[in-house]
Length: 74
Image (tube, rainbow, N blue to C red; front, side, top):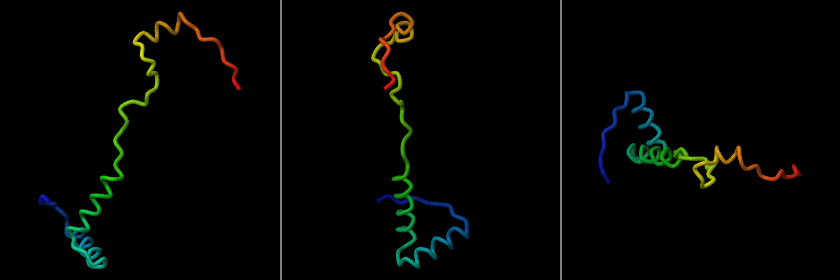
């Protein structure tokens, strides 16, 4: 485990110390839990939605020349 330094204002430090005392854990454990939760909630943005992934690079040109047969709407 690596150590790091956080800069907290007095109010935040006091609140963290109080919560840790109420739960019977150290401030370090409380902060690690909060960081773990934040990391778990983070969802990376998708690089692509897959829209238009036809596999061809000239789709725009082909769209004007080749028309698919109409499908029934139901």
